[in-house]
Length: 70
Image (cartoon, rainbow, N blue to C red):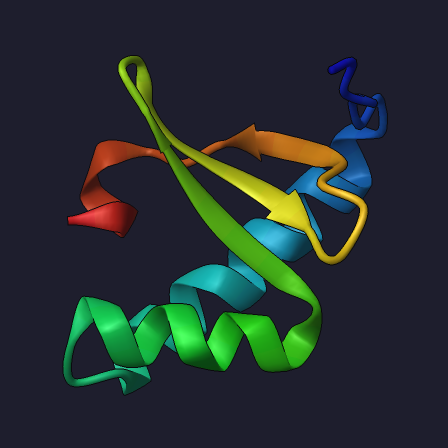
């Protein structure tokens, strides 16, 4: 299965800002993932860390910093 990758740093920064704000609002990791799905994003857990992807096509946006995904 091949994945597409995001190449736009501006988009990545804007999305990370949204992801961070939603994490601050959510009471749990599960709620956070549910909130992100409403925006069309998902988090895929990998051995290297959490990867932010778009739904439903799984276009990888970026690796999430550890302090956000904790």
